[in-house]
Image (tube, rainbow, N blue to C red):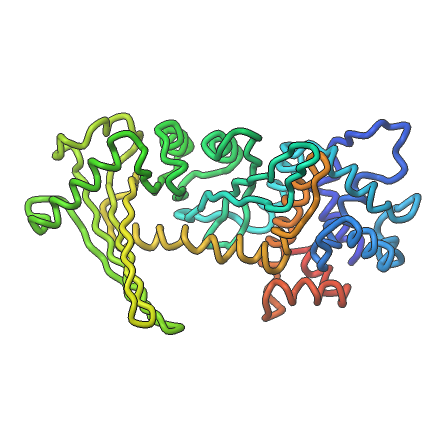
Length: 378
């Protein structure tokens, strides 16, 4: 069974280019990657913990890894992952994702950013790394991630991430940062649909859409191609009311300027979220553009799927993997370790026999080698 696990890992990472000088290699790259992946699944959050795990599980690991010079030191783990090309590592990660679960037709893929808060280094003038990731909301899988370049923003990272994803038939959701004409064009060219939040500084479009919905509500959407849907959720002492209004046949509204520049645009959306807690009420209106048909129920559900990314992915990474506390900073190590966390999260999410949360699954994998093998084999 251990050999089967090794074959699964090697299938996806054995051809990974090794950035080290051949004459100075003491530990095989596939061994380093495998030990680290097993350690991260089992609860390790930094290089000292990875080394400690490796030494504790040396005899078991030796059953399917060569480990010609034993378990590498924590400095070696950090140095090697700091040298690995993140884009290359990402491509091998994506090959694994495709075998774990297939993205289905109509899957909502949420593109969202997350900062690795402790990855900054004041001494070297290095800012904290900001990652943009793609989350398949139906399968609960991380499909990929890209680091935002220093002194840049998500606008430059999103196209890079989209390019490596297979989006055919999917729905891409992005917050207001991704409301760019080039991004909508790329999504349509990749044969997907989009639902993207509008931002107030997006030229005249935000004002035009907001003004149109204000007028439409005043006239009760008379003679307009519209749709409406409402949901109410109660729990934990609060009430959440969400209302969605949609408008299509947009060419009938000449004051919506520059519509032709937004590739595939069919529908504009207004979502009002009313939250009632302990006698206090807050109301928030947001606007979206979408290439989807005029279906308020579907567009509201699509938007809610995007909001859930915060709980389904980011919260789990921070609570179960302590990602925000990680102080990994050397070279590309923070970015590459972030990729491995997402590999581990994907594998743990796909393992269904243990009816418990991710944090407990990590502990169980560390205690029970047979369960770890189940996780590794998907």
